[in-house]
Amino acid sequence: MPYNYKVFNLRCTSTILLPSFVMNQEEVIPDFEVVLGTVVPDFKKEPTVKKPFTQFNENEFFYQMPDIARYFVTDGNKVVIEPLCEDWDSILLFFYSNCIAAILFQKDQIPFHVSGVLDKKDGLWLFAAPSRTGKSTTALKLKEKGYTYFTDDTALIMVEDNQCVAIASYPVLRAWENTMNNQQVYALSDGKQLRAEINKFGIAFHDDFVATSQKVKGIIFLEMKGDSIQIERLKSTDGMKRLGDNIYRNNWIHGMNKQLLQFKTLSIISQKVPFWTAVRPKDKPSFDSFADAIINQIIEADEK
Image (cartoon, rainbow, N blue to C red; front, top):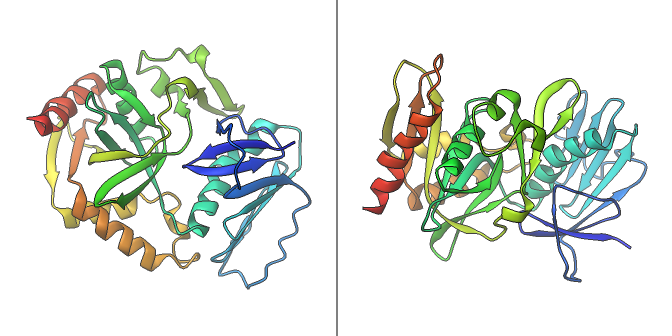
């Protein structure tokens, strides 16, 4: 009997357990399925991108992690996984990070590389930045101060009924060890090391997860430079460009023929939400005061 899940508000059936996803109790027609099988990258259409471990076109995506697993994603409705080892944590780690993004692109949905929190009036604030810039730590600092954690690393952002909304990925925080040491919400013992060779930990927060779409109040681009905290409002054109740089797996856009979708998505979002930059010093501890500055100069200033 298959397991039923939801992820990015999509319904998924799977022949294997997917612990990071949210269980779905409803018996419904799935948006996509996950099965085990032999992966042979038998493309119906010539791949537009060919790399040593990845090949794909608009509707077919092949990915292999040597000695871990092979994956084939097709037509936005099926993922086949061929395990090459018994390390299911690693097998699923690469499934979560790559195959689900491929499903979304194949369904004409663009994921963004953001974390986020809900304020005390359920307004959603998203933080966009490259890895290791402090998205997770900043969001956790706001959680320490009474905000609700929304998503750790990815979200869909779109405009529905003339409002910009976002849908979180799934209820797992993936944090580097230095992130864990810079917050007081979770103990390091609450997490599970994702892979033996990296100091990154996964922490489930299923009980607190908000699975429904939420109205976006603003998007804040995080930076590390200089020796002081700085907050600045951005023009919509600048925000649109920066948001494009924070598309999750944005190097897939051309190979998957999503340039027009990218432009339309970024254009309509930039018309509906304000953007800021929030800069913190790179070489000195400042996360607590940085979170306070974001609250005082952006979130609470918006409520006045």
